[in-house]
Length: 210
Image 1 (cartoon, helix red, strand yellow):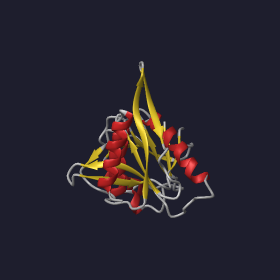
Image 2: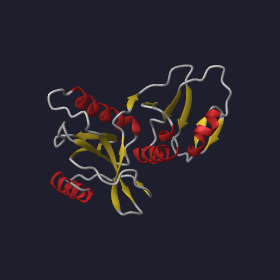
Image 3: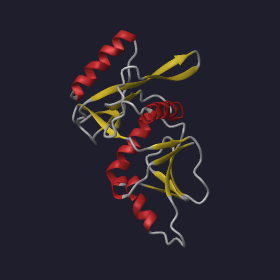
Image 4: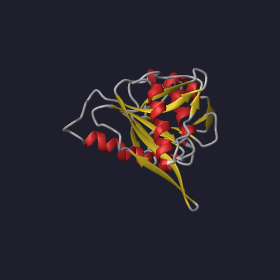
């Protein structure tokens, strides 16, 4: 199944349930096509003055790649607990599990005019502060750059800055995302990290949301 088929399914689902998902946008495609997939949705929902992240994984088949479609307006503090539920469901399922299946976030490539996908299968989320002794890269709501120590730098300079410091003992480099940033901000940061940082690192599976 191609991405245009996925888009069609999103529209049918939206019409049937009177809901839609406003996807984040970027000007680059990390992954352009995912075969053998099924969808997960996290809708933006209002109940009075409260905002709800409404998870629907009824169409998600354990053995397939999961395409997770999340409304860009939702804050991370609401999105990530639902993503964690979805991850736990897939990781704990033994009978129909496919170890080669992946999880992807979907977003719109505004240049290529297509759906694009960002893998996050191995990411482990923690809704807390990193432990003392870690070297924290802080991604703050509303900022184009990131904070390392007392400095504000570009995402592309994270590794250069880290390796320029002469540590007595090299600490763990961890990412901390502002829980109040929108899901769209998060995806834009993740795309920059995928391009400029994480492909150069052995592994950075844990992300802190606080």
